[in-house]
Image (cartoon, rainbow, N blue to C red; front, top):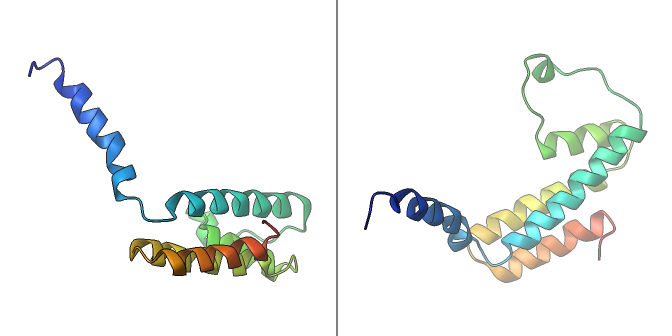
Length: 116
């Protein structure tokens, strides 16, 4: 193998590694999390605001669960918080390669935010 090909081969291995490590419903988790993130962003943009948290003043990035909890505290429903909790369960099941439990948790998450 020439040294010129080595970076390409390393890059190819790095790109393919996540796919090889994916669980039975990883892609469904990703798409549901994206839908939940969009819902939370819409709620945040159109709803009441909250005072800046101490973590925010320290430049800490918010977590999806933290955003969902804040939206629930602002009276914008608990659907995002429930969906995030179910997504957390789905991720745990996905890591265990428990497809049935993963898809059950995903169904509950999607139902909580009105997705089919």
